[in-house]
Every structure is written in structure tokens, then in C-alpha cells.
Length: 233
Image 1 (cartoon, rainbow, N blue to C red):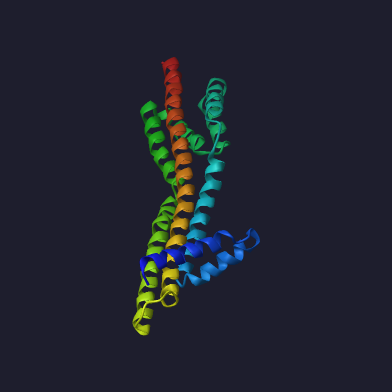
Image 2 (image 1 turned 60 degrees about the horizontal axis):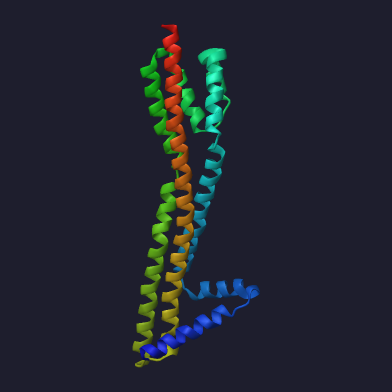
């Protein structure tokens, strides 16, 4: 089989695929999944587990979002009206990493500005760890999915060459199964990696925004505590 014949065969396959009606898309996908061989299952597992971790992070990060500017204004008002105890109560009743960091700093405010600042920095690192939890698993599945696809490609090519060896000749029918496995596993592995990469990048952007809010808010809290200590002095 020469190169032009192989290209023509692939073109015919693509043409048949593009003419598939939308109602039969699911059947076509299931057929190609089965035709891809054993490596399709671990690739599917990467997609399912990766999406599960991504959705869990998305739900957690969505709950962690707060109106930082409004919260800072409320904390400053609480400090003016009820002192540190009033601000602590407000932070304790507010969810989100910014409120948690504020609460940690206010708990050490009586020990001085330096102690409060150290508490804010330390707890900020802890909150960042909570925000980034399970992100490593998403990136792991992004890396593993195409690797599994390429491994399936190698398996498919081995199958094709074994078929050629047994038949002692080259023809489209002989190598079709092996090449099909090689192409399908690569395709599915790359598609899974791309889907998970989109989720990963979005989650990273949300985490960066939350971390930026924490850092900015922490500076404003330290300034507010400094003003209180200056008045007392």
C-alpha cells in the first residue's frame, strides 16, 4: 500500500465521519470508543476523574468568592464601632479565605502588630494550600491522558505490523484495525487533555484572583490595626 492510497483511505474515513447525522453521533462515538481497544478505558477514566476533581474545585472556589471591597469596609466599620472583638465576630460569621485570614490576624492583634502580621502571612499560606487542593490531580490526568493515547498508538502499530507479518503482504484491510487503534487512542487522549486543560487554566485564574484579594485585603487590615494601635498610644 503506497502513501497516496493511505491518504485516500483516510480522506474517505473523514468524509464518512463528517456526513454522520447528529442523531447518530453518540452511536458513532461509542463505536469508535470500542474500536480504540483497551487503552480507551483508562483514557475515559482520566476524563471522568479529572472532571470530578475540576467540578469539586469549581464548587469550592465559587463558595470562596466574596465581595472583598465590601467586606473590608464592613471590617473597618466593625473595628470602629465594636473594636477588635466586633471585627472578629464579623469574620467568624463570613465564609471565604479573606475572612479566615482576617480572623487569624485579629486573634493575635492584642499581642501587637508584628504578631498579627505573622499570623496573617502564616494563615494566608494555609488558605492558599486549601485553594490549590486537588489541582495536582487535574494536572496529572492532563499529562497521563495523551501518554495513554500514544501508548495505544504504539500498540496499534504493533498490531498492524503483526498483521502484515502474518499475511506476508500489505493491504488496507490488513492494517486497518491496527492503524484505527493507533489513531483513535491518540485522538481521544489529546481531546481529554484539552478538555481538562481548559478547566485547569480557568481554576488557576480563579485561585490567582482569590490570592490577590487576600494579599490586598491583608495590607488594608494591617493598616487599620496600625491606626488603632496609634490611637491607643
